Image (cartoon, rainbow, N blue to C red; front, side, top):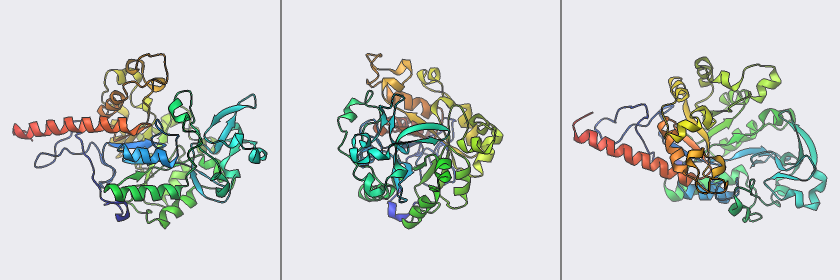
Length: 401
């Protein structure tokens, strides 16, 4: 069971898209796939990608709080680190990026408008890319607390942009405190899936993320196998190192192309595709519990439009005893397949049939989804669970087992 400080587990369960049997005695269907056999996470699970980032500026306490209110099972803080060693939630270590012309680019804070921090502007090479802007590792935690969060994609999420300046940047400890409090208040275990951002880069500058992360888990009684925590990374070496330091679940993130950056630095020619072969998945299982692929590797747009189907990748991962959590499902037209876009289809800000996209991936057999609007994912998961329970009841009523 989950560490008691996080509350009682109320795990949901669904029958497998692969047709797994009902639980003994009928009534409750078995989970699709459970790696490790613990009660957490529920399967399928709703992971709130950067919080409820379709509804609030990402990686703010308000985004996480909204996600929990909307039924998320797990919230996801991306982790970077301050100059004085505090882990904080930002999608990138760059707090604001300058475009090629030296003017405004992507920003998740108001730092570019702060004259008192103008001298922190610099250019760095992060994972082989030159980036100009302001970086979390050049600020103390006290200084970061003076900054205000901004919507990262205001052209697509103008309602979020109207909230610019209202919220601060949270530390991981503040997020842990929120999750613990909400788990107790709601009587259900809410998990965390922190992602270590750019681990090779941070190690290269003498500021590794892994040590303070494990220390924080330990200090909060969460460095245990049954804790509701999943640590993620796009790299391999830091997950392998973490496997020696923590028993919590680990998730290997996989992109559609390219390779883990630690492979690039080490001269390893393997790509993400190589990690997904049967041999690659077997090797992955020696250090990870979860495969977290980009959604296009599980289902293409046409398959999603048709309502989903069994996925070969999901089957291979399950055969290797890996759970599968797919990323990222977003409700706006800008991110949906043509068949699921809302009207007018040319307006990227309009919401389409997001629940249908989630349902398609559930039919593919995934064990969870990362969603920018966890409420949309929650409704899809609950609808599928209702269908499954009806099927279970019908099977019991007819005498089938």
